[in-house]
Length: 251
Ligand code: IPE
Ligand code: IPE
Ligand code: MG
Image (cartoon, rainbow, N blue to C red):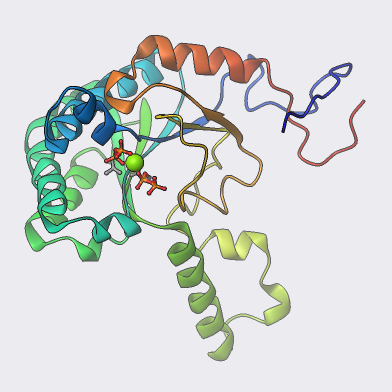
């Protein structure tokens, strides 16, 4: 189905006056297919995907995007075969050892969103160290979504609000969007303006469902390990041409 829209009016709101999104979120998909196309094991695709992360961080900084959220591992990805899960956690462990210092030197502040308690103690410590070491940085806010699932996140928020209500700390009438958003992993962060998914799949796969309510979506026919600065720049240019309405009457 194709939807045609007439563009005869000016946008009511963009993330910043020059059309640069404040917050870009990326579903980094296609590592397995990249490897399969080369007759390589999936691990090779995941390794190459890790290099694309660095390129994307640098591209975001170059474009003055101040928030970048990368979907690296979903709550549902634990269901993959055990050997792939251990390949992925192994890569995460070595990434934490090798990349954090350089990201810190670039001025990147790292935060993890997701169920970090599902990782082993060594990885949890690596994640905490990365957050602590980079806490003073301001050039780019990098969120890495690890064992992240939006439905679990929203459920957790609902349970916390229900408990607060039961304890008499909040009146049910006071539970509004602000109160719920404050219980999400992304509390205090701006919503994504642009969500990019690579690999040609056109779905959100349980990513930032609450936060992306009005995000612009872009599905790119490039596999994540091939993603580069030119793809990022093209996505930003396409975003600048989009018209965001937020439900308001056009015109
Ligand atoms: C994305 O690539 C990485 C993770 C989900 C961890 P995939 O592993 O999903 O690659 P495809 O979709 O099978 O090509
Ligand atoms: C989404 O990709 C999760 C990440 C990119 C980390 P998947 O490959 O897991 O999503 P589905 O299974 O194709 O929906
Ligand atoms: Mg995939």
